[in-house]
Image (tube, rainbow, N blue to C red; front, side):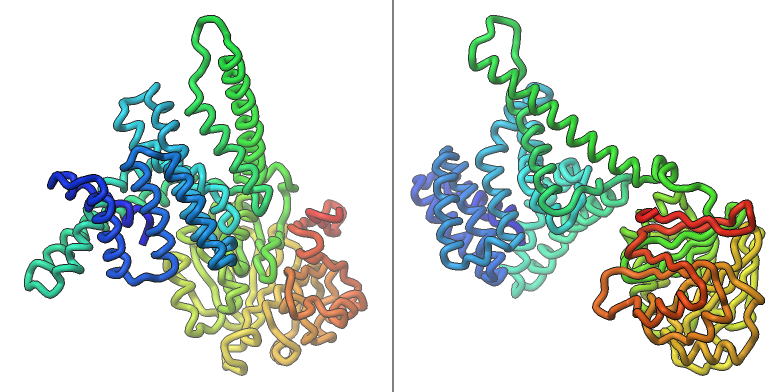
Length: 533
């Protein structure tokens, strides 16, 4: 339930009493009684009571034509609520409801008057309400979701007419549920505007650049608060017209100039950050001739292999956003071949980032999580592979080394797909999934490895459960460890010692960030690290 629904109930009750010619005091009391009944109907949870309190304050203040009194009552109500439960000061729902109410009382009117310079009054007022709410609530939202919805105001403007109908019809469906035919008819009527609101949200969310990535934490809060304040000043404070400049006019001009300057600086910084990390400028910030790329996706795996314009992605990491950032930065728009070594969340959680962009999926034994992964990917064609399966990626060739055709281990880490790939500009590489010492030993017993390797993707983020003999036989020049902050002690010192003994140079994504590898002109390897050279 939102404060808007509470406000609508108050307005309906107030309007009905006014139509009957009731005195203002009776209208107010009736409105509050109706609101109390609505709260009881939808169950008086803490969030409902807070929304009702904020809505009652805002609507009554506006209906009485005394916004200043509303601010005073709002301040008193917030103080009382926090004295009763100080922990609400950390509750985002409470903060958002207070900010939205304050914006309605203080900001919606000036914004509406400012917008009337460019559009008819009714449209200006309709636009000012969601704009005021977004300007006030945006900085709070980025504290837990560092993104700015670029179409939030028009989406709310389009959805707004349906909300009152849905609320009234839904309320009628609840009140007349026991009346044959009436309750069902009201529920059906409520469904139509509800569907309109839902489809509006989905349509705007699906538009290009529906959300702008923003800075996190205090920096993001401050930057968006500055942007909001500047937008409010530029709209609400009228420009100086011709005539003698008084002191007030000089202050007004100065305020608008400062606001315009700060807005340009902040938005320029945000646009520059987005451009550098985006698909246009992003690829210019890293070497362009890489063949193997280990994305920094935290505690998870996401490794790219590229040959003659075709791209393989081995696992998707734990989160879609971080994988999407890496793909964008590297200029990768589609994945020809996706290898899901197994279905643990740290290897498949980022699947949504490549939804609808995958040509074919190779994977290990399925478990009960596989169905959700296929849906997240958009149900691309997929094939379970076993040792001996092979194919091409551009001019490179890949060969599955594990799992064995006869199941020796249950689905999971030890049945991870181990893939060997080389040729077509790709250094000979062995990607070990999350295999352990036992499955690694079984793999070595089943078949011989290639004569030599240049790159090895260390198993299971460098856990201690490794077969030292495997890394000795591989003898890779570079060992990639995709790893992030974790409570497991990965990578283990024992494993790092094994790699040093085998002669490998270690590239850890938690230390080096994005790691790119290319074949050098002298027959060796060129390794680029985002951090640390």
